[in-house]
Image (cartoon, rainbow, N blue to C red):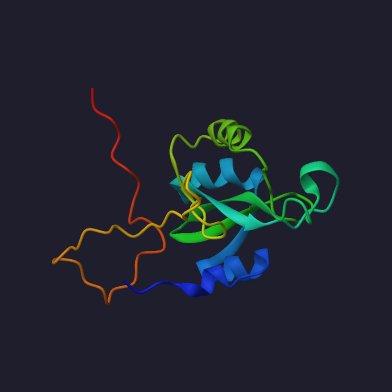
Length: 157
C-alpha cells in the first residue's frame, strides 16, 4: 500500500494544512452565517496539529507540541477554524472539543491523527494500521483517501 509521507514530514501547522488541502480560514463567528446560507458542511474533521499558541501548562510547546484543530467544509472546500485574533483555534482536550462542536451544531465528525504513532502494546511493540491478513482484492497502487467521501449514515432505531 502506498503511504502519504508528506503529512508526517510536516513540522508546523501551516505546512500540515497545506498538505491536507486546507484552502480557507474562517472564524467561529462565521459558522452560524455559513450554516444559514447552506454553505457549511454537515460534519467537521478534528485533526492533530502542531501547536501555534505559546504559554504555560498545556501551551508549553516543548512539553506538548501537538494539539487538536478543527476543519470544516465550506462549499466543498476545507477551511480551518481560526480565532477572531487570527490564530488557529486549539484544544488540548477532546472532551472540551466535543462540547464545543456540539454547541456549534455539529452532531458528528471525523477524527484523524497523522502526527503521532498508533501506540505500543504491553510488550513494547508498536501497533500498526496494516492488517496482516492478505487481501487479494486490494489495489496496492491506489493512495488512501485524505477524507471520507461523505458523512456517516445516521443510526436507525
